[in-house]
Amino acid sequence: MSDGERFTCEQENLLDSWTERTVQWIREHVQAAGCEGTVLGLSGGLDSAVAAALCARATPGQVLGVILPCQSPAEDVEDAELTADALAVQRIEIPLDGPFASLVSLLPQDGTSGTMALANVKPRLRMIVLYYMASLRNSLVVGTGNRDEIHLGYFTKHGDGGADLFPLAHLVKAQVVRVAEYLGVPQKIIARPPSAGLWPGQTDEEELGLRYDDIDRYLLEGTAEPGVAERIQSMHRRTAHKRSTPPTPPFRLADDAV
Image 1 (tube, rainbow, N blue to C red):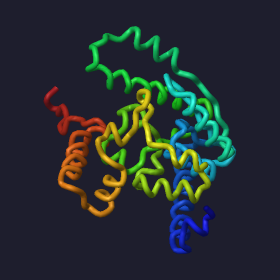
Image 2 (cartoon, rainbow, N blue to C red):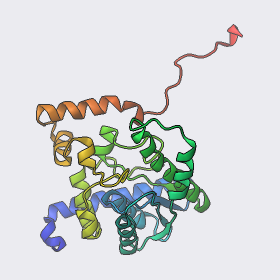
Image 3 (cartoon, rainbow, N blue to C red):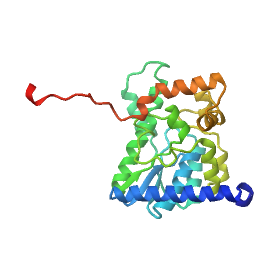
Image 4 (cartoon, helix red, strand yellow):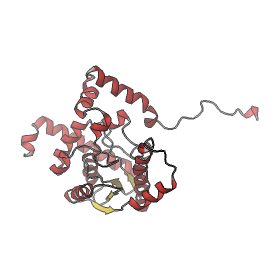
């Protein structure tokens, strides 16, 4: 399908404008930090591909896509490589299976109740590596979270929720798809079922118990079936701490009290 078939002229103008402003926004933040480029994790999924495409425009020649398999399917690595090659982004692969296994062997186990705790170790290990590479390259770490994920708290605190910039933060999932098509992300990546890759066969919608179409509609229009709305509202309330900086006491030690 051609760009002309995908978008009306008005829609394409909106995408032009949004892309230009977002690319400039990334560039300005990189420059303000005294940095030279951008670093991001390439999972093989849609969001990381769109973020990489934007970075490629904002800091051309100074983008590093880091592929960080950790008990990951081979297809994830292949799709991450496909993304990097299609967008002409420099890439490096750093397998984390060994470090993950070594760390897990040192941690106390609690049967099945620890499954999510262990799964969250993976994105936290990945963020360690991303910040290491960013430090080596005098770059900012770019996060890939979209509006749906951020609103629901569907990310790992201090894992994929830890980054310097989140350029997709105001895009719902359907909008990420539109931007991906506009930016020339490979169709195979666009068609992939969204997954955080926390365990084999995991998909976002199954874990969330929600469809992205329903989340999008709720965020854009404020409408949803009662059960869907309640679940979205509940997840948003329970994960408020993920979207805030750590709280500090609202009082000080008075000088005259010492």
